[in-house]
Structures are given as structure tokens and as C-alpha cells.
Image (cartoon, rainbow, N blue to C red; front, top):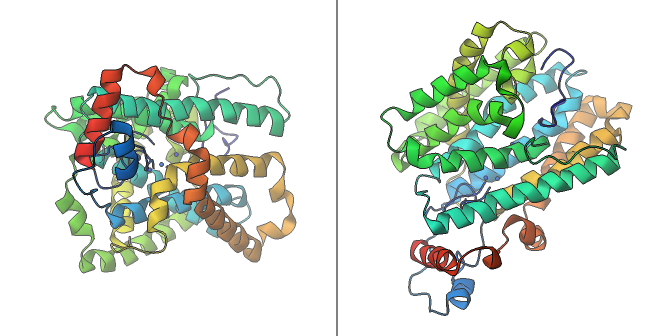
Length: 407
């Protein structure tokens, strides 16, 4: 049985440098953790005071200011991720919760992945960037894959549950996907039509039930078009969705999406939005995989644009939390899964309108607290390890000099 899955459980019928959760290259203002994952900021090479201490040279250039828009977008998206996880057990009793769940799942991870792609444009497989990719994405993947496994053994009373770095469990799929996507960035930068090619790959994956669960390749391939789409975006594209006309248009579009989701909730298998299975594994004919892949990509891009249209452009009280979204993404998974293992949703009042509102606010408060600077400092050893001992000195120095030039 596959170990990988999103917060939602698999239905009985075959049924996330500067981010789902994101790392981003230090050369960009702010959007997916720098060569690391859902948000990695504050490394020695990225902070002026620590950079000087690490290199022994004065910092001669002022730090490049972060773009508040992308930090705001990452924070709001990670809040929606947590809310979606909290709504999953409520869908069976509330059609409204199911409609919200479907709507949010249409765009929250695609938004994260688009931002990750946008901030991966400068990735060139140089020694410094490869080092940051390993320490900011690969190492956290290993640490949390092991941590989640031990948590499941203890919390779910399953002491024999295996550790497998080839079969991501729960939220860690995003890290392995980001690692693979970023490694392929140089290829997408040289092909003529990267987005149509990525879509063709996603379509083929959706009709290929033999791909299997290794490295969660179904998700890696089916979400790939959003990463490539982010790679081809330019600053002027984001300016388009910041216009007043875009914000006004986003309101009826979101309203229409919610109405459609309310109609579709009892009729549609939500597992389509997880993109972890082929059409055949979901009990549908193979050709439907191609149709659903293209249709969902179009719907997701439209809702992502609407989401970006309403993201504040100025600094707000939560802007600084955008640098901690990866922390919130990975850490909240223990609570999200624990709530199922410990049967918290068996409380009847949680399935009332007041209970659903309470769960929603609790999820937002939890994820917000996990993105704060104190939590980042506490868990930086796992999310952003320096690991100078693991790399040749020239790679470490290149990483340091690169961070100093781009900051």
C-alpha cells in the first residue's frame, strides 16, 4: 500500500531558496525557499551580519529587499493548506465544507508550486546552488520522512511501519518533487515550448497506472506543469494580476468556482486534486485522465491568478511569516495527522457549523504560530543545516560568495 498521501485519506474507491509548502534561490526577492523548500530564509550566506562572519569579508552591498507580495502570497497559501487539511474529515457531514475543500485544493498547492518555479529561474546547477539544494531540500526531506515514520509508529500504534526514503509519506512528497523539478530547471530553460511539453508529460502520467509509488512520481509528473509555468513567468506577468480590474474580476470567478464545487462535491472524487493516482487507479477510463489533467490545469491557473490578485502588495503584520512557510508546512503535519490518529474529530460538536468554524480558526492559528521566527530558530538545524563538513571547501566558498553577490 502506498505510504504517500495528502492530509485527505484515500477514498474507498481508488482515490504539499524562497514555499506547500518552499525554498528559493538567494538571487530572487522572495517566493520559495532558496534552493530549499514551503520557505527558507535566514541562512548565513543570506544575512549580512552572518555572511560577513562566515566569509571574513565585510558586506559591501546592501541586502536586496524582499518582495512583500510573494511573502504575503506564501503565508496566505500555507494558511489555506492547513485549513484544507482541517476540513478533510468534515466533508462527509457538510456539503459546504466539501465545496470549500475542493475549491481550495484546486489552487493552493499549484500556487505554491508556481512560486517555487518562479524563484527557481536562476538555478543553473552551479556548486553553490547544488549545495543549497541539498541542504535546503534533500536533507529536510530525509529528516522529516524519518520523523513522520517514527511519529506514525508511535501515534498510530504501528511499530513495524517501515522507513522508506523512496516512498514519501504525507507532506514530504513536496520536498522530493521540488528537488527533482529544480534539478531539471536547466532543461526547461532551453526547450522551445516548456509548458506544453510539461503538460504532455502530466497527461501521460495520468493515464499510466504502472508508474508506481517510488518517489511519488505521479505527483511529481502531474504537478510538473505548474513548476514549469512558474519558470516562464516574468515580473510583468505578476503586475497584470495586481491591477484593480483583476481584483474585481476575481470576485465573480471565485464565486462561480464555489458554486460549481458545491454542485460537484457529492458527484466528484476529490482524489483527482491530489494528483497521486492515474485515472485507472481512480476507477475511471484512461482517456479521462487526459481530459481531467488539462481541465484541472486550466481551472487551477485561473484560480491561482485570482488568488494572486487579492494578495496584498504592501507589508502587513503577516509578511514576515512568509519566510517561515516551510516550517509551518512540515511541522503542522504532526498535528494534522495526530488529529486523525487520536480521533479528535469523533467529537460531535466539531461537525456543527460552530465546530467547523472553530476548526478553521484553530488551523489558521496553528499554522501562523509555526511560521514565526522563534519556531524557525528552534528548527533551523533541520530545515536549513549548514553542513560545511559534507562539502568540499570550494563549493562552500562559492555558495558564500554567491549569496553575498545576490543579497
